[in-house]
Length: 236
Ligand SMILES: [Zn+2]
Image 1 (cartoon, helix red, strand yellow):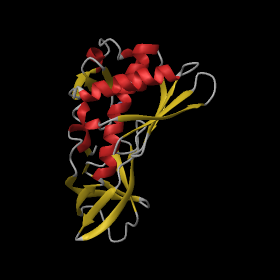
Image 2 (cartoon, helix red, strand yellow):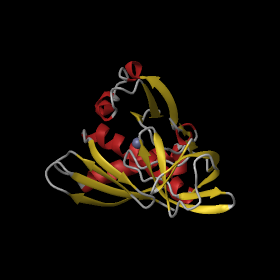
Image 3 (tube, protein in one colour):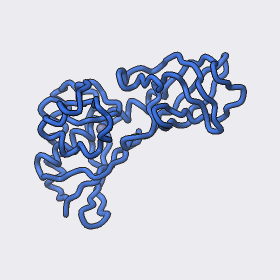
Image 4 (cartoon, helix red, strand yellow):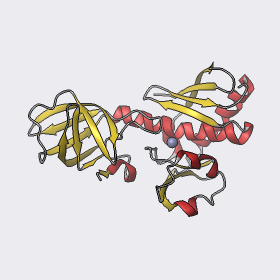
């Protein structure tokens, strides 16, 4: 099992590791700060430096408990080699800001209108969330986004901690999301914005809501009955 450095420190931009395995598409490392595509977020991009040579990381994805770093080439790479990993921080940090923003937006849609998120996708450019409601009105959008930006201005902490599954299930509001977590995972990673949202979540977040900056509504899309999509971004 690889050491997943991004779970403890999402602000880690560089790290040292060793190649465990070389595949046709890239390399698996013994430890990594590269976030693999999952939970609606894109995988990290960046660079691996091996013996002074730079390899471009085009993306990352999970392979069991480990992370496959997709490379432009694996020429000259072998298991046991030491590497230095460098995350494309601009890309990652925007995803972190949008990810925390998405927790605030979906918590508000749920609290105010009982709308539950049924899917989502986050890139560095924008976030999309699908809700199981019949309609989303301009008034709902105004209310949710103005309240979300108040939460940003209050600069609340975003707390990340680990909790036994049985304990986590006692938290009001976390049960609605429990179906997303595989039951065999005994210890959950909890992400809490006090008074706003609490979820079991494996993705990288900013440490305070103030880092998000202004959240901007872009558009809504109608994908059918009970499938209403809201698209938003954060200011540069
Ligand atoms: Zn999340």
